Amino acid sequence: MSTATERNRNWAIWALLGPGLVFIAGLLLVPIIDMTVISFRGESFGQILPGFTLANYASLVRDSTYAQIFLQTFAAAALVTVLCILLGFPVASLIADAPARWRGLLYFLVAAPLLVNTVVRTYGWLLILGRKGVINETLTWAGAIDQPLALSGNYIGLIIGGTQVFLPFMILSIATSLIAIDRCLIESSTILGAGPVRTFLEVTLPLAMPGVIAGSVLVFSLMLGAFVTPLILGGTAVKYVSVAVFTDALVLFNLPRATALAMVLLLAVLLLYALQKRALRRFEYYA
Amino acid sequence: MNEASTWTSLRALAAAAVYGFLIIPMLVVVLFSFSDKSFFTFPPSGFSLKWYQAAWNSERFLGPAVRSIVLATLATLLTVAISIPAALALRKMNAGRLRAAVEFLFLGPLIVPALIIGIALLYSFSKVGLIDTFGGLLAAHALIVFPFVFRAVLTSVVNLRQHLIDASEILGAGPFYTFRRIMLPSLVPGLAAGAIFAFIVSLDQFTVSLFVTQSEQAVLPVAIYKYLYDVNDPVVAAVSTVLVVFGFAVAVVIDRLGWLRHLGGTAG
Image (cartoon, rainbow over all chains, first blue to last red; front, side):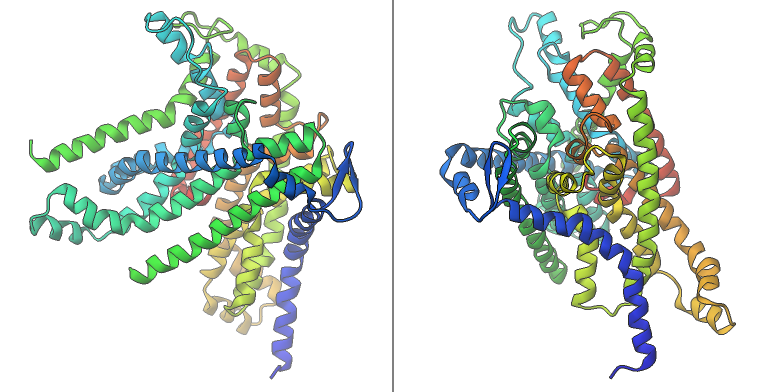
């Protein structure tokens, strides 16, 4: 039953939503639909051909370099995620236990790097890891090495840089879960005779899982789509999906193949997002 | 030492190392910018400000820096203008699938990786001649920062007190008067938080900028990257130091306002 006021209300809602919907449709939905269409088109000398073809996706499957690119990208994202959990947990736990007047400063030092330009932070790693970087020069000076170590322009640089860039997200996410834990549970566990290790494994860790999961999915998907770090620290030696998309699109002018690659990446990220929503709902249900 | 205090000191040690890991790349950039040589030496020697002077005199940074600031400001204002009505509309909608779908759509630019937005816009913009134009760049940045403003405004809109709005309407105020005098003042903190995040995200945005511009409309991060690629001397470190100081200054402001904790969702 739709009364006049209700019709008015609906009109008002759609009128208010209008600009936002047009904005998102024009700049996000239509371009992504266009991109999907292009990924099913042929290409010749930088020109997009009419018609429908599965050749771009077929070449992703057939050409073993692409399998390698995807495998290495996923492996790098997984490794960065695990490193973020391992490095992030002690910091998050310190923040959660810190007295209020220290907590602010500890939070600040984690969050402030997020406000510094990613290109700048990655450049810092280039200065540290490069052939003539801080580590190589220091080790040479100390007489520990004769030849500079290859720390950038490869996977080592990519993993170290990626971990530093995305670590704050993991710390903030785990800290949020840890702060929410009722102190009484930890005390009960101790009073009942559990040592700190057992308390950690059986009380703290399970209750921190929502933060770990949310942080992991965030870091994993950010690293999957990361572009700045692979481009600057990985160099051409590293096979990374984002760099391959960039090379195909802007260096080789093969837009159909670049979009096909991008579509696979987009599907992976959307799938992860859906999985995260489900996983977090389950945990909220238990909690 | 008992088991618990060993555990605590181990944790403090590990955390200190991780803090070092987070801060060190920025520290190295700052130190390198004051070096008097164009390459890194150990032990470090000499102090000079010549790279700052070179950066100021170089034609490659000032223009892109001004463009980045104007761009971030306009993109933020544009998204504020779109976000307020959108958030007010969502408040009036009944919870359900439709509302969830609209919300998902509005947060879309945050979920889709910047790389994919970049390549999608590259094709769409080239069809309508927006590649390497300021208009195209502004549209792209507005899209990227929209979810940050929208989410912040939505949170404040949801917390609006309905009885104040009702009271205003019962006392005879028109919808615009109610908006300006009752709703807008309670939206200001959320708006300010969203706007600051949007500004920072726009300033940081490298990927999409690289895809939708060529040489005419270079923004600061792209200019830094290109210089790094072509020349790579401490001029980059000098420009980067300015950005490190700016980032920390903004962090102090956000911290004072008590919003630092909400940064967790600022997916770059």
